[in-house]
Length: 177
Ligand code: GDP
Ligand code: MG
Image (cartoon, rainbow, N blue to C red; front, side, top):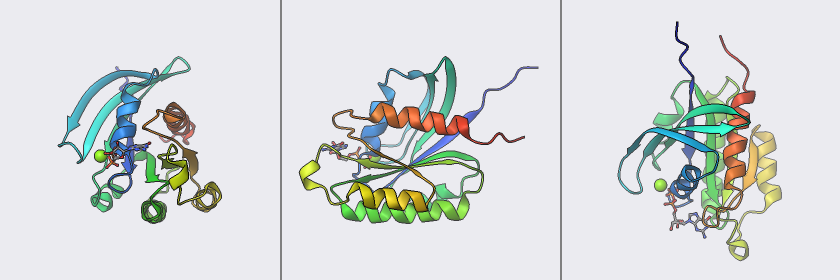
C-alpha cells in the first residue's frame, strides 16, 4: 500500500501591506525550495495558496502555504490541523504589530496540537523608521509560545532562516496517530 506524504498546512497572517506576498515570493526562489506542485492565485494583493516542497537535510517537507487575505483571518483560524502559523507585521508600522498580537491571541484560543507559531518582524531594512523594538516583540512571543525573527523581504535578509525555521518547527511537532 502506498503511503501518502503528509501535506502540512501553513497560514501566513498579518495586516495588508506588511509583506506577506513579498515573503512568499522570496520563499519560491529559495535554494531550499523544491517542487512547486500546485498554485492558486486570487488576484494581485488578495489570497493566494501554494503547495511547495522544501528540501532540508536530505528530507522533503511538503507544505500548503496559504497567504490569508487581510480581513479573512477568522474563517482561516478555524481551519483544522494547521501545522504552522506565520504571523507577519512591519516593524515600521505599530498598528500592524498590535494586530499581529491580536492574531497570536486568537491562535492560542484555537490551537492545541503543538502547531508552530512564528512572529515575523518584516522590513528590517527600514531601521530608522522602526516603531517596535525587539525586546517588546520578544516579550510577546515568550508569553504566546511563539518564535521570533526579524527579516527583510525586500533585501531577502533572513528569509531563508524563516523558511528553514518553519520547516524545522513543523518537523519537531509531536507525532499524531
Ligand atoms: P502584503 O499585503 O502583506 O502581501 O504585502 P506585500 O508583499 O504586497 O508588500 C506591501 C508593500 O511593502 C510593497 O510595496 C512591498 O514592496 C513592500 N515591502 C515588502 N517587504 C518589504 C521589506 O522587507 N522592506 C521594505 N522596505 N518594503 C517591503
Ligand atoms: Mg499580499
